[in-house]
Length: 154
Image (tube, rainbow, N blue to C red):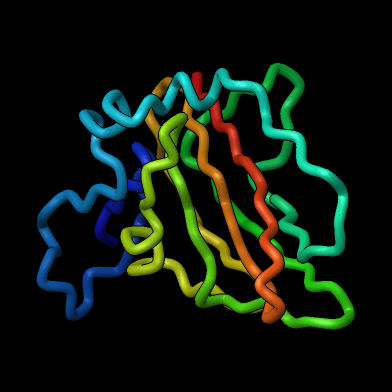
């Protein structure tokens, strides 16, 4: 298995047919984590949005822990729930990193298959620290759902 870095997370990925095998593949490298304010983004207050009809994003894993800190490795699993009048458009999926919302979508989608139901990443390893990922998805009526995943690793 090839380790794969995702905003500091390391994911185990099969190397078959991948020209990048033997290299570290970063979705967000340590310098970008500083430049795009990963920890500052983690500390910022969540944006409150007015309730409206829109798709929903459920974070299934990692599960909440009492002190809020995780030990690596862990899985990240996300489920999308559409409204009755419009299905999810998986091509609209985005992942934004840190306080400045640096777009890392293309880096993630190289290794995770995004479907109308969601996605799952196994064995995510992340170094000590605080990180914030903003997940976005739209339905076919272009209604945007957004959900933050804040991860602190001890």
